[in-house]
Amino acid sequence: MENHRKLIEQEGFSPKFGDMQAEDFRRYGHELINWIADYFENIEQFPVLAQIKPDWLKDNLPKTAPENGEDFGEILADVDKLILPAVTHWNHPNFHGLFSTSTSSVGIFGELLSAAFDMKAMLWRTSPASTELEEVVLDWLRQIMDLDEGLKGIIYDTASVSTLHAVAAARESLNLSIREIGMSGRDDLPLLRIYTSEQAHSSVEKAILLLGLGQKSLVKIATDEKFRMIPEKLREAIEEDKAKGYLPFCVVATVGTTSTTSIDPIPEIVPICEEHTLWLHVDAAYAGSAAIVPELQDCLKGCERADSLVTNPHKWLFTPFDLSVLYCRHLDLLKRAFALVPEYLKTSETVTNQMDYGIQLGRRFRSLKLWFIMRYFGQQGMIERIREHCRLAKLLASWIEEAEDWEILAPVPFALVCFRACPKNVENLDELNEKIMNLINESGEAYISHTKLNGKFTLRVSIGNIRVEERHIEKLWDLLNKRLELSKH
Ligand SMILES: *Cc1c(COP(=O)(O)O)cnc(C)c1O
Image (tube, helix red, strand yellow):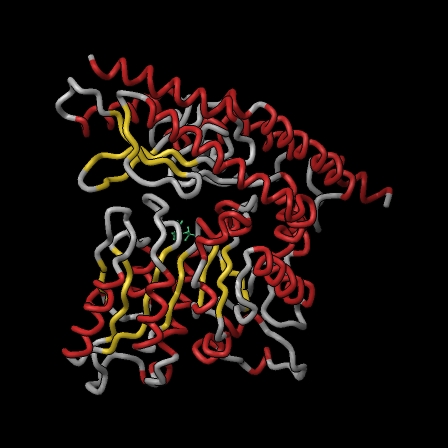
């Protein structure tokens, strides 16, 4: 031991073999946690959007890796000097672009610990803790969201990948031997058709691309004045396709679309799916978290009849990226689509082996962080926080509605506000609103993003950061009004 220690002192910072010494790990670990605590405490002092020019970081880093190991303290110092300026601070309470992130400190502890275990959850035998905790935690979440008991959960990295697996299971349900003989080089397959709204997330189309269905398989159904799929149009499209000899097989409806958080009318879509025996997948990547709040649970009405549903705790349930949950009524179909067990992974237990339910072999121990979060906040703690975000969004919307120079452009069912400036004497409102957005984002004071609704350039403000308070929304409203004054001239 004594000799070993000497060797470390002589040779510099890292020992010749093996990992960092436990003492160093402790010391630097404390330092790193302190660093993160300071970061969160002072986060409002940083510009929300990184203020660097492209290539700045690349130009400031050496072209080759260091020849010899360096002291971890030096590495951490470079985080301050080089990494921080290149960070866009998603955790800043005035990050309102896209969808705000909601990560919590207790979730970060979960990430840290799961990295320490570093298990690759493929078989139950290699990872009983991950396999079983995932099942329990996802059933807890299912209950809080008031989802049907028939829906069993499985964790993937992102909603894009959850939806990909849902569509694969839907295709498997057709019994067309696609697993065995594929889709190419055969003339016994009609054109498969999948339906979603024109407001759906691009991940639906990406699933089609990856599954070899081709964009020709995707039908985008028109939406109404509240950006919701029109069920009548869906029915017509399916009937037309059937008349042409096509094979409709799946509908992807959205609860909480990305652009406006609109809600497709699931209770009216369900009977259409049932009548034509179509798989119903619900994309609730964003709004699924809202369904833990009793007075918002209505948004998932009808989902008790869905075949699958995706929700992203990494979006709005205080979970560090990544953790997406696919609830599916027919996990056996997922298994039929993907299970492939090489000799060296064969085991004799009759247990759940998670590698059977998707394209990944190893899986991260993601349920640990969600378990930490659900226990630390409790159901009530999570509900209160989501409820508060929705209250703040409604508050901002009420200020916009009362103001002469502003207008709301979409309903606000959750915690996203779509609006624009509309002063009477300005001709080009698109140009004006884009200018307001750019001025705010360049200032580093806040970050907002945009969408296009009925051809109008629309500002989007998402409220979902765990640190957000009313004062941040007041600050944003003030910024918006000041930039509007500037932009008019
Ligand atoms: C964010 C979002 C997605 C994609 O989420 P990832 O986890 O990044 O793949 C899909 N659908 C909707 C409705 C979303 O809002």
